[in-house]
Image (cartoon, helix red, strand yellow):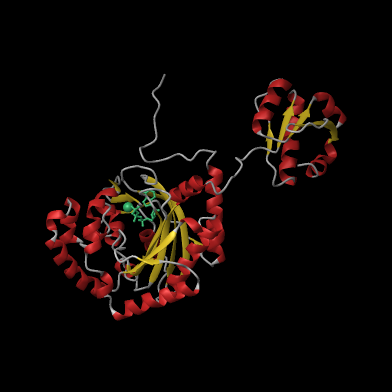
Length: 424
Ligand code: ATP
Ligand code: MG
């Protein structure tokens, strides 16, 4: 026997028993963002490697060790997208969507990062993301956060997630803070791990984003960015907090929240849950006013977030908040013999067109009544329709209830859709 080929580690199949929950989540997401006036954008899964290096930052986990990068046949360096914001900005610039315009956009799709696979952390995972371009004021930051809060409400997750908030300030404020932070880290060099020692000089803020619990105390004792905020960012942040208060959205200001990507400024936020162990961040985002220009466009303010679909699915499963029946058939048609098989094609088509919400399966593979009834039973259908040569000649079909103890009936083929509409 040939050896089985297995999926790549950290890249998951989504099986039919799980797709209804995914579809439910996707439907809630689409519906909610549409109600806020956001439009979908789709971009390729592969981009030039340079796009991610320039946007996410050279000294970040993603670019340093997580990207799936390969040479195209012509020698170009390409990368499977590890996130969507850079791609969205690239597409927006390329098609002139951003300059001097307001855009409310969303996307959904697979992302790729070569991480250590574990619960809630995969190498192919899916993000739903949203980006709002062209608005510099804190009202749009608030809108984006209010939208996420609405999502949790719609999904029944509101009691299980909480909002963390911080401001990264302007580039100049961060530069001043950086000096203070490096001085502090140098004093505690002996206690830092290898990554942090390296980052202390290349990208010290990243040290605050460490996943190493041994560094928690050092991080907690570090000077705080809030003490270095510029006046404009401080005002933006307090306005945002006032707006969230007005919207009744609770938050915790977390001074060590810096996010793992370089392009953020001013507002950053994360929604976290305690229900998923170490992988507790379900949604993360912030403002990135410099990115459009950094990627070759005209300066355009922007804010957005991405949420991890797998983590939300895990959360919904763990909390058992939704129970969705697996998709099953409604009507199963069993033709006996060739003449009936040929006639049944048109009958099935007619039922599918006229009973639009119903799932109609026409038995394939022949066999006697016993075999076909077995399949009908397995399909989950409520109704079986048996078409034999005699019935066909009389213009009739036999209806059998497959789940209920009701007598079988003979129906006129000519009126079949109307008769069934009243029953299923
Ligand atoms: P983490 O701190 O958990 O590594 P991150 O800061 O790298 O997350 P972002 O790049 O902000 O994550 O992505 C936004 C969201 O996408 C995360 O909050 C998380 O829900 C999800 N996500 C990120 N990486 C993965 C992954 N490898 N597998 C599953 N979901 C992920
Ligand atoms: Mg990460």
